[in-house]
Length: 247
View 1 (cartoon, one colour):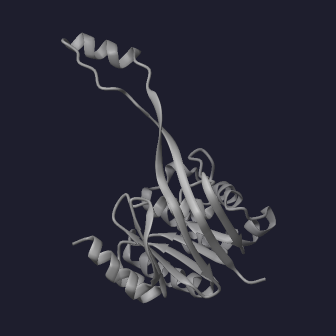
View 2 (cartoon, rainbow, N blue to C red):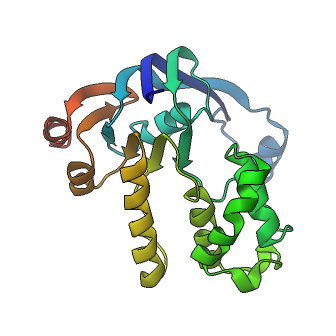
View 3 (cartoon, rainbow, N blue to C red):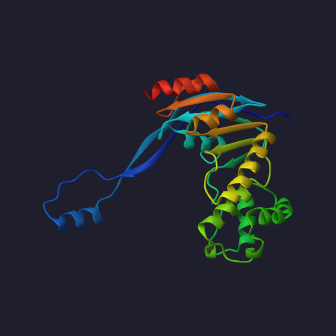
């Protein structure tokens, strides 16, 4: 079976809560109003009529300014957000490197968190157990396997999250930016693994602000502006169109 991903007229509308502006004559009135007023639910359109296609061998850069909808679109593509309108067709197993702390519990041990995170990724328990030794080795946490996650430093938790997220290869890899945090030794190791996973994936979708990485890694581009597709085509043409938007 070949890998394939197609978004047709995809839209995403999400609820959020707002307080209406009020005028108060005193500090007490302001405090009382804030504690008793009921927020109003309104709906905001994040994505609208997004259509593009990725087939076997494609590396697609999602390009756009902050707030353009890149991360939201990635979450729709992973299945985390069901589209409000339109249709998403996916063939192949998806691997997402978005929120590397997803599925973690501070009260569970490192080894238990590997199982929790792996389960959140959709991996069967037997496969997670097979990968556990490699994950501990890659993250440098062999000696901390039975420590509670909350006792680890932020850097150690980041290494664990990355190691689990990239332990298994998928047909379709979805990335939100490129790794750029952590100590230099781990960054070198992590970048080597990222390159290996990108090469081994049938389709890669990468949301990035780094146009040089987009040019070097991808062959196609989708430019987003205000939640809509402003341009879709070759990556060089997409970069040129994005630069026009930023003038």
